[in-house]
Length: 314
Image (cartoon, rainbow, N blue to C red; front, side, top):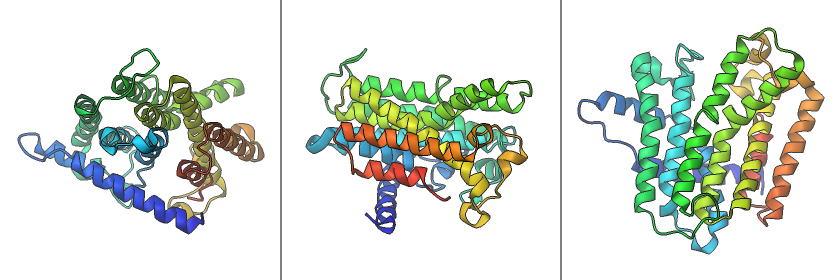
């Protein structure tokens, strides 16, 4: 498929997912109306909806002809709510202090830091309210060969773990601590960087693929393989981001380049060199593609999506 053809299909899928998310938006009413308004403002800020698209594609691949989108829809909304909450909190003055995201004012710039903090909290909690209600009302699924036979419970556990201190939040913590550390050896810096990329960036990608697989009927071994694919894609995505911060242009990225070096951040490029960074991206991408091939999912839209994400220019 041509790049233009793929991007058209991606836009169609993003619009499809956005329409689903809108059906789960909370009503802006009552004494909590303002925070509900801030939550919806954040969710409707646009974006490519990459994580719910990955979850949907993973679900459909494993479910095959028996796919029923009503099973996965609440979880699509939930993963985007979790992702959005993380962005709202990242933008706060106490974190990155960004006033614009995707071409419009960030949540704290519109509603204030206090209300934005509550909006992020609300989105995280509402994500689980949405997913749990979906699990309670969803159709019966086949038994899962893991710690629990209930596929909905397994999916909820994955979402909770990957979003929490043993996933994304843990990665964010390590990222903040690394910014304030000046006495780490190169070996320690490399270990910390891997942990950050694996968790801060990779955890929600892993969750998206794993939840889709679990609800689609995958067995435990297949879900573990999807987790590894998600890890590869997440780390490769972040390394490519580091590369673009040096080789990209302001026009392509829509933001100033060289910010990582200016801020003294540890990156794969800084620790391993540009050529090794590019080689690592290719290695991780090749591994992810091979794993899809082993499950007979090569040449899928998901495979094309990985290539698009990893080798992007912006």
